[in-house]
Image (cartoon, rainbow, N blue to C red):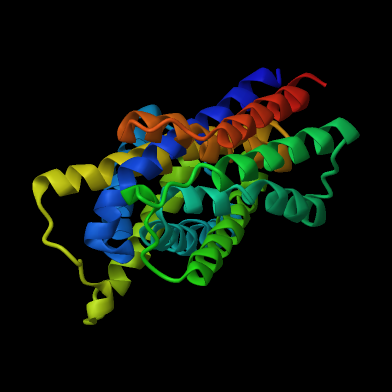
Length: 296
């Protein structure tokens, strides 16, 4: 039944849209490295305990360990460090604009990697979704808003966004063969997160100011850091992995990239400013493209 993986991919988008808004303040206070290290460590402990309780460790096909290593190193560590730094410099809307490229990038990668092809209506629906995403984010910017303030060079934001998209897309596709053998999405996270937490903790031992937190860590700041991590690393990632395993990888990535549109009402509630008409039009285009993919 295709409705379930489609709903999972859209649910992942909703989670990331919420998480990226929640993550902006603690990411700017702590810096990309320390913010990512805390999130990975806390989420790795939580997802490992969940897998132990649910008995998922036995479903892990360990002969895929090279794919696990690559997915962990590039998909989680490099991809998320780039994404968080992009968020710090460019804000949630610009970051989501860059991440909306994940759909076509994964579709191309899946074509060369797994030989997956797209039908005519799938391509049309995907193009409508991507057009809506670009329109929505392009015309929702408000430079007077703290969320839209550019804190660095625009070329750096674009470069970091592209690195995040390529790394995260590669990380998801690398574990698809293991999931095809029955490995659960939560077990995938239980393998990837502790590995990434270990690597980043070892790197943190290097005595350099680059890896030091930019602000003092407090209990409220710790909670603000961990919450979006749980939403993104555990809930949204598990939903998207399920969609990847039970649906076309490229289309799952497109539906999992709706957060640029879904972030509009979230920021509306947060900032009390309605999105611009063209941004709303883009949101409707995304809904229409999603309907084409799901129904035709």
